[in-house]
Image (tube, rainbow, N blue to C red; front, side):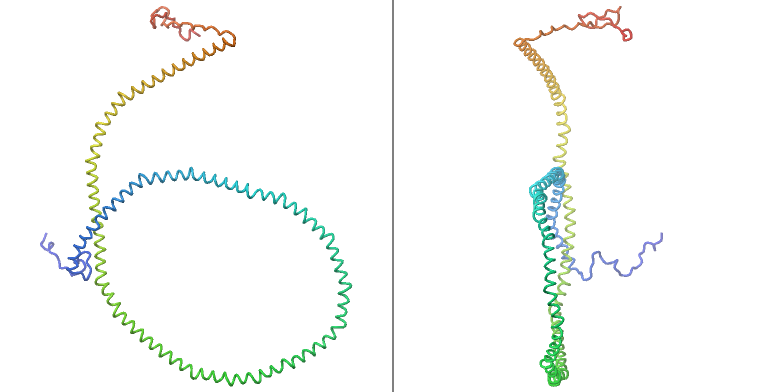
Length: 394
């Protein structure tokens, strides 16, 4: 390979030459202050992070060991106990409510109030209205119409109507001549011209020619003065308040806040690594100091001792207890049989009855032998019984 391959071509200055996390405006002072700040923040954040990790581990253990089983138990109790009990209570409450407050009133309304009101009040009133009041009203109406309304109508149409038309026309004419036409003429020819040309026209001319230009000038003057004052106030506020605040925020607060936030983030991550390392160390120490000896003790001491106790003590004791229980049960059954036989004998002796059948001794079955010619005994002291095959028995 030639030497040219090892030479580096000159690179123009750019962003690739700037250090990581570089921001314009940072100098040596910021870099020198950053490391002590991060160390101090790490010393402050490390206990918090370790306590936080410990709380997280404890919370997960409590959630896994206590909260999950408790939640399942509460869910089971709610589903299998509280819900059926609540449903049964609600059904019983609804049934009792209906039985006490609904059904009696429904029955009272249906079978007492409605029949009594219907057949005791409504039906008689309807019969009285239809059979008595309606014919009586029709008769009275016809009587009044024929005896009173018909003569009055004839008098009104034949006498009062012609006389009333003339009187009405004269009254209207006199009323208008005395109370309407004079006032209309006064309003039209006196009041309206005087008010229009003596008051309204001068006022309109004064408003248009004097007041409107004067108002426009005053408004322009006030708006100009207000704009000047507002511009001066804005300039003063920007110059005396906003600019210093922006400068302080940009050159002091923002860098300090950014450094503090970055220091907290870095310290939190480093504290997490340290906390995990401490946790692993504690876990290793706990396993080697407690878990491993306990495991060795359980595997090499407790397990063999438990096997010995199980095989040498527990199983024989259990077998002896079972045999003792069986023997005691047999003895109790035999004693019970003896007591029942004695009770029957005593009852028979007091009351009387057929004699008890004598017990027949069962035939002593001889021991089996292989054949007629072979007399080998299988049971000591017992005569052998001839061996007969099944097809010979049949």
